[in-house]
Image (cartoon, rainbow over all chains, first blue to last red; front, side, top):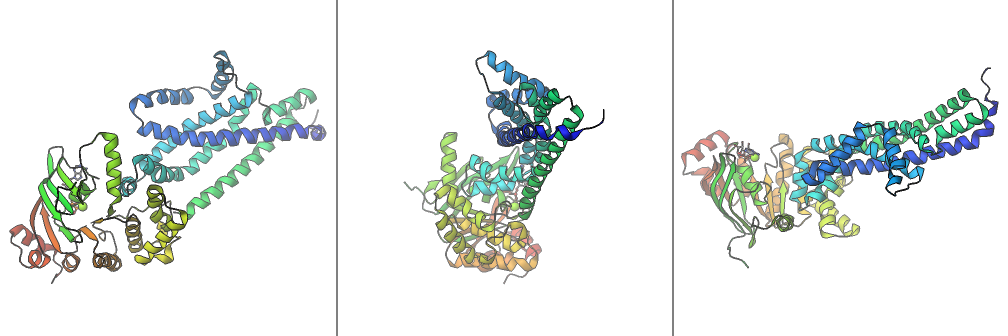
Length: 218
Length: 256
Ligand SMILES: Nc1ncnc2c1ncn2[C@@H]1O[C@H](COP(=O)(O)OP(=O)(O)OP(=O)(O)O)[C@@H](O)[C@H]1O
Ligand SMILES: [Mg+2]
């Protein structure tokens, strides 16, 4: 039985809907991981010990355990304590927090690397430490780690396939649905692969634009 | 509530880093509109003294007063933070290495603090930026990022940034030491202009000619002490102390 792509067009709606969900969960989780990464980095570096400790545990949990387990924990585990999240929400939170922890590691290193003269200059003008962090130090740190954060976001796109296991009909699950009905795994997985590749290209184009804009200010 | 007579008053300032005493009982008064130069060998404590004035390097002991208010008064942490931030709005500082904000344009460097701390409108902020940058001769670079400025332009931008807060006092820590020789003059000219406008300034410098021509008073520091102070004619031409003479022999490029 050779390859036969003639079955694909009939399922194109399903696949494209899957593409949209994949993009939706990737973009929302990426935003969460970005904002969360900044907050976690600032907490890790500047919060009092008593605040830092629970967050260290949190970081350890999200770095030291499989993402799949984290998704199960958020989707199935939280129901037990009365938090019944829709699959999409559970998926975006899980993915977002997971990558927030990784982004936070990058941002922490970058914050430490920002010249101390920057904080001094800001404080000299009358800014509080929080204002100086927000306006001067953190923006520079983030700017410095946009390329590696971009790599994390590409990884996030690929890992978004994992949310299929909690029933988010993103691209991978959509392909599986089509396969279940047509028994054409090779064709549909190939189609899905091409879709991921195209989304990936789109993300890289966006990242390059951002990096170019940043380069202007160097 | 003013129990000082002087505009800036430093009383019995001491500063320790561990066992090392960097400032040893320094007292200093500066009057409104005065321009004071601090000279002295490397490591003598010039920067530490300057940075104590806006509490960037807090004193171990002693008091700093500005315009009748104690800068380093004892307050609970949170209150102190508020107090010191307010005090710093009145004290501009210029650093050897400029410390411009590289992620902001020249305009944004100048307007960031006034917008954030004084809540001025965008329109007023732009007017302020144009005014301050015209003052330092940098209006044509207003939308550049600092990376595209020469050293002299960077330092003039840093001065405009400090002036935009309308400080009562300006502190300069070797503002021209990091500049190529041919760029020193453009920064000196800006400082001279400020002098003519009667800005109160304390200037740490290695440029004896500049100190002699601009300043009302010169302080010579060595090993944490103010060894000698007086008008530039006296300190440069007729120093009383042997240590001052030795220093000047090495550093005088011919101040007349
Ligand atoms: N953070 C610090 N920890 C320990 N010692 C310090 C610290 N900062 C400064 N010192 C020491 O304090 C002394 C005075 O330093 P300061 O920077 O005030 O000297 P300076 O007169 O400004 O010298 P320069 O002309 O080289 O700038 C030096 O011996 C220096 O090593
Ligand atoms: Mg110094």
